[in-house]
Image 1: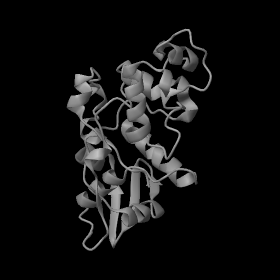
Image 2: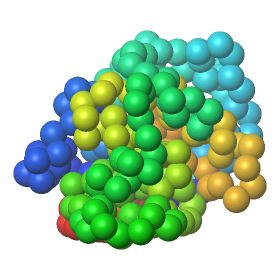
Image 3: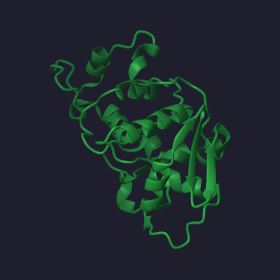
Image 4: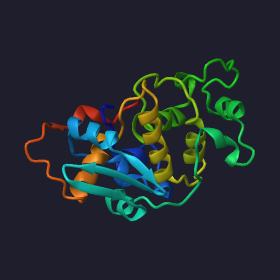
Length: 215
């Protein structure tokens, strides 16, 4: 399971990274308990029915529609649907050119698309993408398909984050080297559907999980 991270939206604004057009405030600041066993059961029983997520826990059927996403996270199912196979969805997007434009030293050679060479704003956004929005179990220092998300955030292009998160959940279920993401989000879904969590082992997200300084 990925250890959840959170970030203060007001801190992002102080860093001049106000991404209010992405409607991410509630999701980025989401906090709550973590139930490792229930997270595993959630993913074990998870299926995809059209635009809905469907899971079953402790006698409760959970059909997570776009309306549920809106109620829990404030997200709307609108914006670009980005995945690994459609990076050309943004007109004139060029991965290498965009990466070069983000470098502190624009004359550096492009080798492994390392986050470490990016300017501060782009590096912070890359950190938020790889730790919170599409969290990975390892290798947070190299950009992959997430570079288009960074481009969209920096250029105020609205992303359909519900679609993106669902795609990432599917990837986590399919690939053995991925850890289960979005543990606190799943807790919020459990609370929304009034799943009985009494007696379940839980952990509380700690202040050390907050992103409040330069990565």
